[in-house]
Structure formats: C-alpha cells, structure tokens
Image 1 (spheres, rainbow, N blue to C red):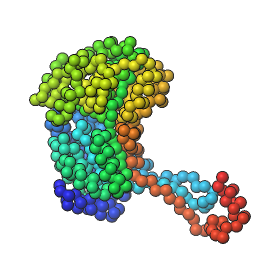
Image 2 (image 1 turned 180 degrees about the vertical axis):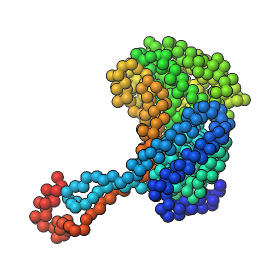
Image 3 (image 1 turned 45 degrees about the horizontal axis):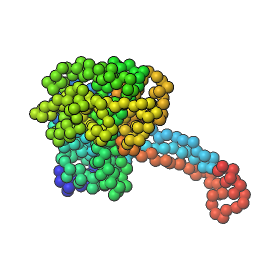
Image 4 (image 1 turned 90 degrees about the horizontal axis):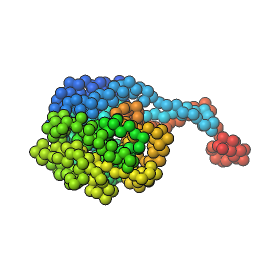
Length: 459
C-alpha cells in the first residue's frame, strides 16, 4: 500500500468514526462477536500460518495466541457495559447543585503496530481492546511473519469493512508512511529502538502512545526455592517460542550455594520437556529469520555452554542452551537475548541482587523463586519492573484481570481487560450544572461577604 492509499484509508476511517457508528454498545459487542466467530472459523489456518513463520505447534499456538485472544474477547463481552458506563463522582459543595461524572470515550482512529514473535496475539489483543472502547483501527503487523500477516488480512477483510478495521502489510516504507500520518492513538509492541522512533514521530501531532517493549528480565532463584519446580517453570518460560518472548527470563541470578544443583535440574528439565535431541523435535520452534539466528549465535559463547549450544542453519533452530559461568561483561549480558540462551549469574547477598537489578534499565518482567514470604515482599517492593511472578514465569500476562505493560525503558501504558479498555479510551470529566440556582459570589464585582463564603467552601 503506497502513501496515497494509506492517506485515503485513514481519511475513510476518520469519516466513519465521525458518523458515530462505533459508539453504541450493541455495535461494539457485535464487532467483538463477529471477530470471535471469524477467528474460530480460521483457527486451523491461523495455526498453520504461525507454524510456517515460527515453527510453533498448533497446541502452543492455541495456548499462547488464538486461545488467549478468544479469552480476551469473552472477557470484554462480559464486562463492556460496566467499563463503558458513566461513573458518577462526588461534587464539591462549591458546585452545588450539579452532577459530576466521568464519561469514557474512544480516541478515534487508532494505529496498532505489532511484532513478529507472537504475530497473531499481539495484533489481535490490542484490536479487541480498541474495538471495545469504540475506535476504528488500522493494524500494521511485522514483515518478518508474512504467513500470519496474510492470514490475518483475509480474516479481517472477511470480518470488517476497511473503514472500520483494516490491515496494512509491508515493511519499513509502510511503517514510515503510517507514522507520518495523524492518528488519535498509537499502540506499538516491539523493540526499544523502534519504540523511540514511534514516540518521536508521534510527537509531531502530540499523539498519545502506548509502548510495549522488552528488556533483560531477571529471574532470581533464592536458596530456599524448590529447585525442581523452579527449573521446570524456568525452562518452560525461557524456551517457550525458542526464547522469542518479551517476558521470557533473560538470565538467572541465583544464590551461589544452589548454582550447581539448579543447573543440574535445568538440564534434566530441558531434556524432559524437549527431548535428548531438541533440534529434531517437531514441537520445538525456530528462530524467525537468518538475521536473528546469527545475532543470537553471536551472543552464545560456546566455551561457556554447559548444556546445548548446537544449532542448525538450515532449519534456523538453536538448542535450549545454558551458559555458565557468566559475567556482566559477557556479550549475552549487553542486550536482550530474545532467544534460547540462558546465562547463569550469582549474587553474594540479596541486597546486592536488588542493587544490581535497580542499576540496570527497568525490565519488563521479574521472576523470583523462594519459599520465604518476607524475601518475596522485599524483592517485589524494592525492585523496579513492569510485572512478574513469584515461583513461576510468564503467566502473569495470561489474564484479563490485570493490566500488562512496562515502564521506563521497558515501555509505557498497559492493556488486557479493563486496563486495555482504559488505554484506548479518554475519560471526559463533565459537570452537569442545574439551572434553577446560580450563586452570585463567583461573579464580579467581588464583595467581602463573598470572600468569607469562598473560604468556607474552599479549604
């Protein structure tokens, strides 16, 4: 789609939004219902497309993509009327006699830019929240996952008129064309580098943005942790989607007294979950592209690989790998790994661990394995991070009951459930003033008596 076509599409959506057609709740619910039914109809095709892009099994694709999307739609269908209702608030005595309320209202024309690692989920979940809030939406999926993008394009075209929801495919040129236009809200999921560009472009029109980024998410394993269970859950969260998950544990920071037994348990769990030859396991996915494959290999120091380390350039697969010992100066600790490589580091004290984490860029997630509730409270209170788990990994994002997002270098804003509806809504603060009474004290000429009354009301 060229620049002229993109301009025409945005103008068409703005015109449609201004008709008010997206505002009635029955229309929003009908849109969500139509989307849910169409996803169910295309489910097999969606899973085949995701497998072609990332090598994911249909089980993993449903668990991590289509199933979570359907769950978000169901949640919105159940709660939309409550979310969209005007909320009455207290009116101060100085505004007697009035009714004060907040009215959630859609922004208008929304741009959703999604990444390749969960190409369906991270396109459709923001769409669900934006539709529930009453917006029109233009979706821009990643060029790195073309099969899923093409499948979503067919799905959306069957489900919606482009004046309501449309997909723009393509690469950098299309991204630039879109970001040069005036949107009412931009929702971006991706890298920090591109996030900065999105924010810079949005500043031209003072467009509000949500940035869902990433970072090096630490996994602290404290000496009282259940090591067998910790290893099982860490392996699940780290190597899910070949480590190409924004909230995957990026590295382990553990008590030195449990380093060796923890590594032993991690090795057992890798073999148990992925088999003795993960590169031959059809349930184990692949790296998205040759470029990312080579980048990850550049972070993998084979001399420190105590497990795994093998790769297949033909299938773009890299074995689940553990690196030990690792220092903060190693290549794998200089950037987000975003692949199946797990470095092991140790701390001398929990205070040192807290200071180390807080000295780095704010991570999107933090994970802690411990049996000590006091330590759990200490870590979750003292460390700065977007969200996380105690004695588990990644599952905190798999719910519509809590907002998901980062802050600082890991992003801004949140979505899922009520947080998602609020993200794509502006709350208008309105005072409905009655006409049968009009106190004269706010009008000039001001009088001494009125001054005393003002002080009674405002103190």
